Length: 218
Image (tube, rainbow, N blue to C red):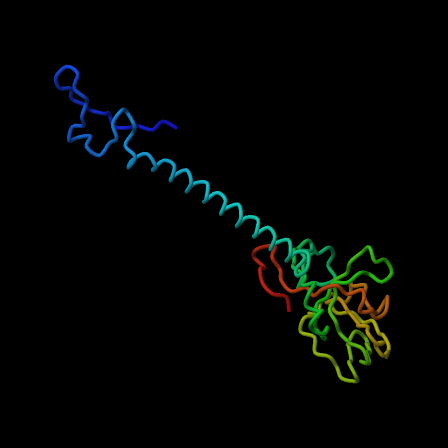
C-alpha cells in the first residue's frame, strides 16, 4: 500500500542555524517524520476490512450450522417417486418431511406420512393415515368405512377410486392403516397391512418444488 504523506517544508536562516517549521508544517514533528494525525487512517481502514471479513465468515458458519441442524434433526428434503399420491403429489416433486414433529405430537388420521417399507426397510413410502390403533377399517367396493361410518375423502377424486374391498380389520396397537390417494395405483395397507410406528419417520408437510406448487400439504 502506498501512503501519500504531505511534503515537509522548512526554511533555513543564517549559516549554522537550526531548521524550524513554517506555519504550513506547524503540527508536524520535524526531521521527516510523517504527520501522525493523518497516518493511522489506512491502518483503521485495514482493521475495519478485516473485522468485516471475520464477521461475515462467522455469520456464514452460523448459517451453515443452523441449516445442517434443521436438515439432520428437523426437516429432510425428499423427492417423490411414483403416482400413488395423485392428485396432491406428482411424480418427481420435492417436499420437506418433518422428522421431529412425531417426537412431541401423535400421528393423526389424515396425516401424510413417510415410512420405511415394512417388507424392505431400504425403501421409503409416502401414504395417508386412515386409521390409528384400535380403529376398525373396512373397505366396500372402494368406499372406506372407519369404525362403521363412511369416511369423507375429498382428496380422492372419482377418477382415482377403485372397487377393491378389505376387512373389516382392527388396527393393532402402535400401528397405522395407510392408503395412497390414487387408490387404483397404490400399494398400501390393503397389500402389506398396517404400518408399525417404528417404521414411520416423518410427516410430509411442504412442497418446495416445483415453485408453482409451493405450499403446505393437506
